[in-house]
Image (cartoon, rainbow, N blue to C red; front, side, top):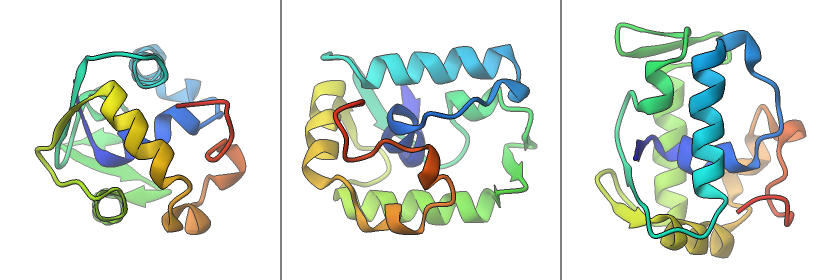
Length: 129
């Protein structure tokens, strides 16, 4: 699986309904959540730019995020912050178990205090990862 940093970190903690983005989006989002929330040796690689979830998102056009909540530049800034706070870089491929360990050790990182969807997030609880 190849994912953006914020999808690796944030999707397991988010408790929001994004069904308006379509069934394909919901299915891929659920796949990411289920993968990242279970013990697994499956590899997950950090990518820069559009990933598996973006590809099925109706807000992604021309390989760029066009979300009113944060366009591609904003998303890339968020990904950079997450990478820095987790101490990894683009291209890093770790198993799900290794990601879970890093995320647990570093949660909640400073960027969570500025997050727009914090009210829909369970970071720091035992509900995810």
